[in-house]
Length: 425
Image (tube, rainbow, N blue to C red; front, side, top):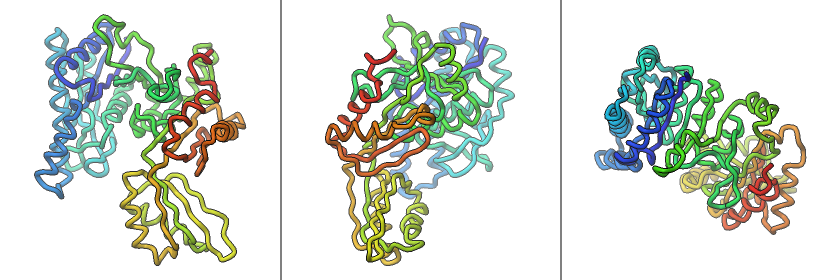
């Protein structure tokens, strides 16, 4: 018998027919003698609808009341799934965020899980009752409902799994696992049997949309094993739970899997891309201590994340150009901030470009092998793809290129690192 937390996203819960299919998947897990808790998202599109209601009610809305409104979507789906499970003969009940409670810290609309009081939940699961929990929501220190931002249900599921010491947290979504790259771009992309927490964090942060970054970091901290599965199967197809998804595990567990011959260790695990990038160049910035701080301090205060940064070698005149990237959605705001600070920074011109993309090569194998970056640069150069900026970490190399060359770059690199399906061992 295992203790399993299952999470279903908005597309999986979009309507009574899909909820019934989810209930069948959950019932099968419980029928195996497992203790089961289920975390659910609101129906697809429902959160957007509720957000619009809040904005129509008050353009400068109170974040606490906003959370009350948008948290209702998950309350509906948790109740509907509990009812559907009961109609199938299963013992089930819903547990709202304030009933457990899921205690959160920080601000409304972007709260973080602090602790979960799991005693009553564990007792209910032990007597065979399936617990259905709305994701995305919790309880603040002053007793108000809070929400965790988009993708927050993934974090809720991992937090519940950590609280009940689950054997595994299964994330059911509209894809059947984590792939070496986007299968819509590369037909030969392979589904991965397993990736490490570190690899998944990097992939999620540079464009892979499978899991919320915060959920992966929490799983790594708490040692929660995650499996990504698809809840979309035809009625006559193999049930999703019988299909191998992608496990997200510690590096130690990954090494054991490699040693046992369950999977092959690849130098590069995956290729990610992100078109939601924008480039800013500030020309003729004074080449002196404190100049760079004058650029990035106002951006940090405005919560604008800066990624790649290039500072050219100072010219004879004691000036330099500074290039960096930010999320495309923040470009107008960042440009306005920098123009306001033009005198303090002392730059000559501001040049922007929103037609850029970030391509990233990720793999823990990079830690012990040299040449990954040079292979990347060579492969792109051979296809005439110009690199505008570079950033690296221990297990990642990212480059900025022209947006129009994104798909070509992904395909070229996928082949260059032997990730195409026909190259798999």
